[in-house]
Length: 167
Image 1 (tube, rainbow, N blue to C red):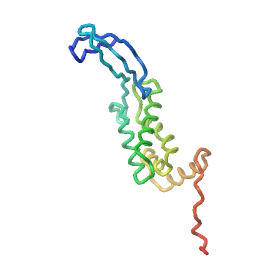
Image 2 (image 1 turned 120 degrees about the vertical axis):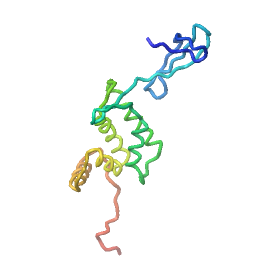
Image 3 (image 1 turned 60 degrees about the vertical axis):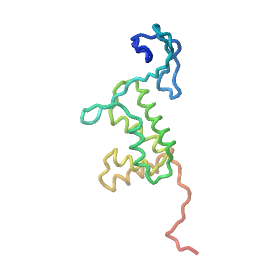
Image 4 (image 1 turned 90 degrees about the horizontal axis):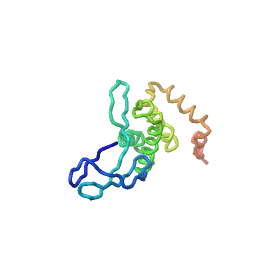
C-alpha cells in the first residue's frame, strides 16, 4: 500500500475514492480524500522503468529522449512533431508491455526500428546506421537490399529515369 501525503494538510494517509486508467493508457489516475481535512485531490501513478545501458549504468526511462534521438534521424525529413510524439508513445507502450521494471537499451533500439521504418525509410536508415554501427557502404547496401525485399515496405512512386535522354 502506498502512503500519499495530503497536499493540503500533509496528513500521511489518504483514501482512494476512484481509480481509472489515464488517457495515455500507461498510468492510473486516482481520486483521493484526506481523512483528516476531508479535502479531495488526484494523483497520477506510473510504474517506474529503468534503462540498463551497455556499460551497465542505469537511468530512468525517458520518452523525450527517444523522441529527441529519433528526431535527429528525421532532420530534414517530412516528419512532424506529432508523428514523433506518437512514435515515442508506441515505443514506450511496447517496452512497458514487457512487464519488466528494467529494460536493456538495446531492446529500446529494437522497439524504435519498426515504427520508424513505417514512418520514414530515410530516417530509419539513418537511425539504423548509428544503432547497428554501420562502418562501411556495404552495410548500407545490405540494409537497403533488405528494405527492398521487405513486403511491408511501400514501393516508391515512379521517379523519372534520368539515364534516358529527355525528348
